[in-house]
Structures are given as C-alpha cells and as structure tokens.
Image (cartoon, rainbow, N blue to C red; front, top):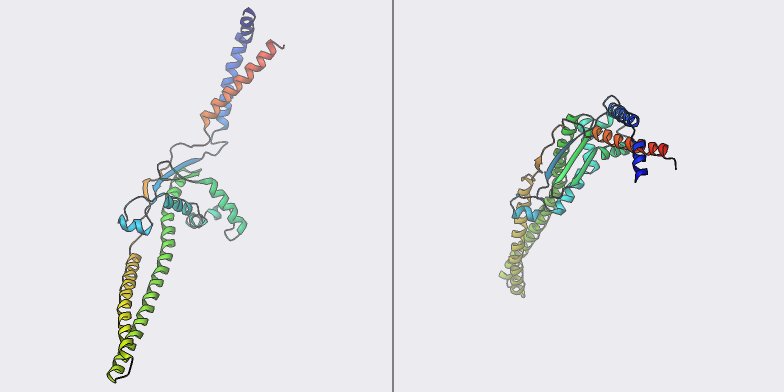
Length: 287
C-alpha cells in the first residue's frame, strides 16, 4: 500500500503536473489552429426531408391523389434520387463538371463526376417513412440550394418517366378503339348485306343474320368499354402527377459539420494525457 502511494507521489510530482498542463494547453492550441479554415476547408451540410407521393394508379384513384407513398413507391423514388439521370440534370443546372475541370463528353470524366457526387450527396429512407436528402459543400448556401434542387429535379424526372408511359398507354388504347370500331363497321356492312340478301329470299340467311346480330350487340359492349378506358387515359394525361411532399426544405447551415474541431481537440488532449502518464510511469518505475 505504501509502495503504491510512493509510486503515485513520484508519478504526479509538481514538475510533472506543470509539464502535463503545459503540454495539454500547447497541444490543444496547435490542434485547434491546424483544424481552422486556414488549413482545412470547412464542409457544410444541408438536409431536405420529403415524403414520396402516391403514384400507383389504383391508390391514386382511390385516395384522389392524396396520401403518402408506400414502401414500394418510397424505394422507387429513392432510385430516381440516386439515378445518373438526376446527376446529369444537376450537372446541367450547376455546370459541375465544367467547374471541376472535367470533360462532360468523356466517359471517364462522367465516372469521376458520379463518384464525386455520390460522396457529396446522401439519400436515405428515415425510420419515419420519409426520405432524407443531404448535401455537403464548402459553401453553406450552395449545399442548401443543391439539396432543394435535387427535390425539384426528382419531380421533373418522375413526371417525364410517367408521361412517357402514359403516352404509350394512350396510344395503345386509341389503337384498340380504332381496331374495334373498324371491326364493328365491317360487321354492320355484313349485316346490311344479309338483310338485303334476305329480302331476296336466299336460304340460310335468317340464322346467319341472327348470329351476327348477337355478335354485333356483344361487340358494341366491348366498344363502349374500350371507349371509356380511352377517355379515362386521355383525361389522365391532363392531370398532373402529385409532387413530393416537402416536410423540411434545406436551409444554409450556420456552422460547419466538418472538421469537428472541439471533438478533435478533446480527443488529442485525452491521447496526450494517456501517453504522457504512461511514459512518466515507465520513467518512475522502469521495472
């Protein structure tokens, strides 16, 4: 017990304590200065939070376009946010490849640009079912503007994708309607011819005429269904798709998130104290 007290007494002599305090102060000041903007460019981060809208046709109609998207739609929306199509749109808006001295027409430069932006932008689903879009940049204003622009561009790209599909669906419905109308026109001509032939007293006409009249009634029903579907799709083309629900728009941050200067200083002090005390213990008791 006495030897332990003697060891502690030798270990924490007044001179060593002064040296320790001096070293703590010097290391803290040096690290704090080294992590200043003079040596390390600060990074700012801005975050926008959105909810994906309903886009599935059945849910859209049942909910009148009101409501948040389910997990499938959230994942699909995240895929748009992470797409190269969005990164290209972002490049067109801010001239990012040009500012980074990259050739926008070069495949290698495109790959470098995508890799650079992947580190700069973070897209993730939150535990509350929303989507977080965060952007890092050396300028806080740029980070906020870029995050909000990503939300805006995602809606534009989504509208473009769905518009292409809706146009194809519209054309297909129109082709079906035209084809069915032509079939009915031909059937009407045939029925008129059979009626004319019946009036001339030709055999077997009544049974064939009766069969074609039944077929005509069924085809008219099919035509009505196709026409309803056609007009439904046509009207949907004029209905804008719901945009993302912006819960929190990105704002410029007042302080950088990197480097965490105080945390680095604190970690440096702890490391210095541990190493200094360990060395002092070896010097006091080499055994």
